[in-house]
Length: 300
Figure (cartoon, one colour):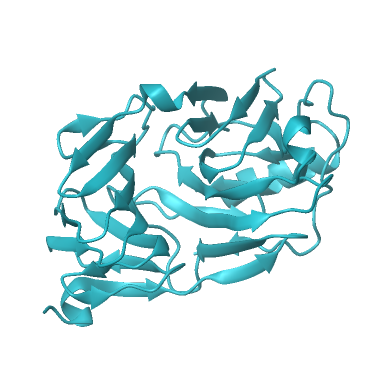
């Protein structure tokens, strides 16, 4: 059996937020680490079952300098943005929203799922855009579940969300070298975690799992040591996310929903949102005001 020090560089404990009926477990950004490859924000939403008639209403808000990736295990969201995108996301599909120079979006529970009370479980991540691409034109991409590569091997089923895993490659755009996969482990499953990129992390979303015999705790992000290969196993069944990619040479600053290598760009975004200069989301007149003290701040 490998020891923790052999395998794990850091274990990132989650900050837990109650968003009115469901919890969010945030492991990035963290006081001890700001990024794993391009990933600089990692949230698990739920699992939760909201009361009948209720729903999630994330009002329109802005982003710059990043891509957001929404991936659901259970439930549904209606995504709307300032480009005119209006699409429902369901489990196994991927929403990739590239903010670049600036975008505004909302995410709400669809009306039909509010009747019995929405169920919600999934992962929301932000990925930094590479140097020279932070201010690119905004874009939105939806890839349906049936178009995502799914691998059945070693007693596990893996959906490749971004990048490549075990010979399969996701159709989702990756601006930097990225690996992101949803690995569902059947009881007794054992799968290889290769030394495939600079930085990698394992997140146990539910169930049980071990890494070379090291027991993993749910809702923790385990940052793996560079160069190690290991085996991810489960006794009773579990679900884990593999996330990582090439290390970024230039630090990224995070303030609220704004990400950039330039603090001046973030200051300008704050001013522009407060002044009402961002594009609006069609047919959605609400907005989230600029906070005085945001929950998400990471200035390296």
